[in-house]
Length: 430
Ligand code: LRH
Ligand code: MN
Ligand code: MN
Image (cartoon, helix red, strand yellow):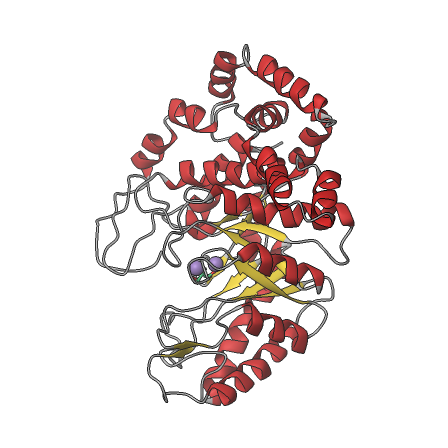
């Protein structure tokens, strides 16, 4: 039996307020889709099977390098975080897995597994951290980790990744995500080629310890913390890594890790075409690695990414099985509310992309009808799929309106009674 931290009576009462309208909205949308040759129940079933993982670090209030302003009831440790993640899953039914970050979430692996299984949760990719120094570690990562000029520092970073794999094995994870902050701040500070050679050599050592049924995801990011050059700065370098390292190595695309206006959906298409798309860190941004809520700034871009993913899914693209994960930092909202809405935004992009009339689109593409081609995408994007998402949540035991149910349950106030208040303070990323 699965434990629920939100009282089931409250979910039922909240759903009761909305269940009158839902079937009517669903039916009206079904009629509309039927006229377009789309069976709404088939879309509903696909959406029900779609999941996105929650990052453990996302349930705490984030911060910038200037300040952090915690909210009430901040999780004290990974076990509080897992509880918060269970609330997101209970109400949205879209997030059965948690992605851990080591050493932030370091704890006895068996205890981690037990606490997640209390709520029926599992674990997605493990994340290593060699971008900051952990208490008591021997070598510092100030000047890099896997690509550091010093062999002992590289070795320490490799060993940390091996430890992440070991923890992951016990808790049932099947992937390791590596993101490093290595790079340089001044022209001339490093030799680009030698630094990348050292990185490749270290990553291959990690890869050699990867279990057969695991995947290695490397994550690129243009800048920050390094401000002049970054070792894994873009998808080109990332692709080279995956290609050089082996068949279990794939590229992870964090939506916030590109220059403004970069055509991310096209990067996604290229990685799919060459069998190297590993997964996503979904979030949104206006300027850089803003880590804003998925779909909050540019929902059309998120839709266009899913347009590529659905195209690959329907075409049976070889080796296509991307991991879906959120990676966000919540500074002004309740993280649980943000993550619930972000999970549903990602689902929404998927549902909308399923509505694209692909046969018509191909016809317009082949006859160079640019206007009708783009209208075909717009028609799908403009269709309000909320009744499908709400129906999926309701039929799987979640909340028709997750935020309303969460607020009605007073979860935040309740945990704030047990979890001591955290004072606002200086900078930090999480
Ligand atoms: C780097 C990043 C990466 C880290 C996380 C905390 O900006 O996106 O995924 O693991 O943030
Ligand atoms: Mn990320
Ligand atoms: Mn990031």
